Length: 218
Image 1 (cartoon, rainbow, N blue to C red):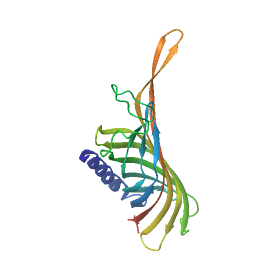
Image 2: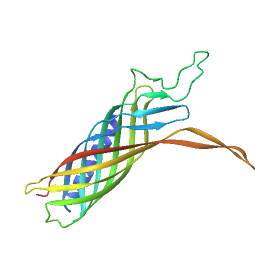
Image 3: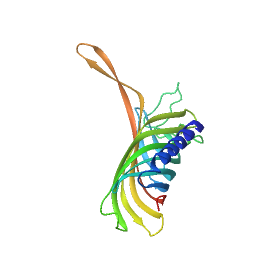
Image 4: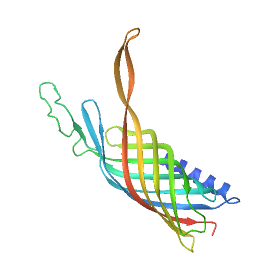
C-alpha cells in the first residue's frame, strides 16, 4: 500500500504547484458512513458490511462553479463469504448459508478517484447545491486473497455551506461502486461451439457524509 500512498501524495503536490498561479484550490477532509451491500456469485455470496469511511482530497476550481478533485478514501470493513447452495465437499456437504471465512473476514476498500463537481448558484451564496461524479480505481484488501486493483466510480450530490473564513462544510450523499472479474460464464454458439464470457461482480454502496474544506486562496 505504501506505493499507492506515495502516488497520491505526488499527485497532490503536482496539483498544488500548478494551482498556485491560477484559481482557488481547497484541501478536503472526508468522513462518512457507508452502508452495506451484497454481491452474488455462482454458488456463494459476499457481504461488504457498513462502516466509517474517511479520506482526503485536493480540489481545484477550473471556473467559479466547477472543480476537479483528486481524492483518496478508505473503508475498513468486514466481508463475510457465505454459501448460497449445498456444496458436496468430498462427502461432507456444506449447508447453504454457511460462512466460509469465519474469523478471517476483515478487509478494506481504498478508493483513488478523480472527481468533477458542478456547483449551482453564484459564488456569493452561502449555500451552494452541487452534483458530481468520479472515476478511478479501488484497491481491495482481503486477508486470504491479498490485494487487488479494480475499476471504480462514484456519483454524489449535496450542498456546500460557506463561511466568512477559509473553512467550509460539504454535506453530501454518495454512491460508490467497484467491479471485478470473478470467472467465466459459458454459452453455446452455433458456429463456434462453447464460448467463454468473463463474468463480473460489482458492489454498490450508498453513503452519507461530510467534508471540511480549507480554501488556500483566502
